[in-house]
Image (cartoon, rainbow, N blue to C red; front, top):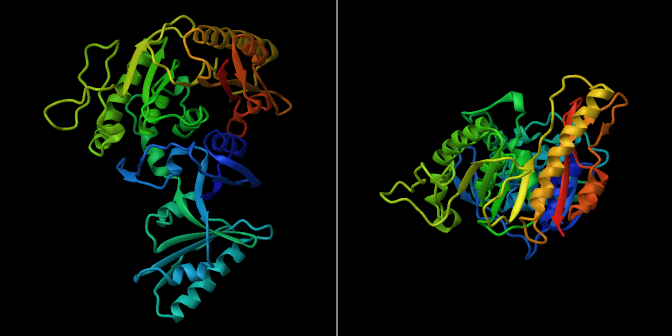
Length: 421
């Protein structure tokens, strides 16, 4: 099936994410891409709604794709023909126009034309007002245009082609999984759940229940997103405080999300709890008298990533590495030199340690720092050739640069996509 993806604010990273998971990915405009699914696509069958409840979804779930705002499929008929076949009841229509000459007015007129004809045939219709040529993610989500209700429909127009939205990124759910976490520390930076999903997805297609390692786990964002996406999670960190934060957050996360997923045969019921160093904690239960002991959802240990020996198996590595000192201004040349040396030692030391502990072709995706300079460009760490010599293949997209940052952000995240040779 062909899908249309509305890409996030950094479309190069969104394209890389899609390209890691799907077939025939083709960018057709700045924020638009087409792709198809195939036998290589293996998504676990559950998604989180804004309340954290699992639900059956289509083979492609927008809430597993951190870099995609909306998903749509091509209409096999005209929008009016599609609407006329809907079941009885009030219809809500929204239109996003991505055509070359699109405007707020053109999008609104398309919606009003549909309403006029449907009202003439006795249907009750509401049109979602456009503030721009395209409806924002928030507008689509909060008006129910997410594809869950057949009578609440968002159409996307791209020149002469029409698409129907089947999924809208649940920004409220992301916010809850981020802001409601009990242990947060702004001083060490906060990894957005969307970016955590992107890092995991850049590892490529993985079997449900695969073990994802985050050797710089911090407060546990990658770990929680890995669990929610149907994987097991293994986190280590050099800081005892970060280990405590991860444990606190993942206990909270297990109570709020994992128990609900267990009751819906998440990972076929093979879900246990966690043990710090495999001791001293009770496993997560299904609410019945006995826990589910077959597999642990997550494991956390304290350890230095440059020397730690991880338990096996490790199916993929996804992490945000050491980003160095946070800056609120552009660093001086001397400061930058010091930071590059410090970060390089940690990142290269980690990759050298990891190389002997993972199998050939194991994916390793790591975000490393890049620093804003006076000319507005970012200076990268400059370790790709060294990484190649350590025994990793470096993805071509990594060599071109995948920088994740806000406008004016001093320390950006430079995403490296590697595979063990």
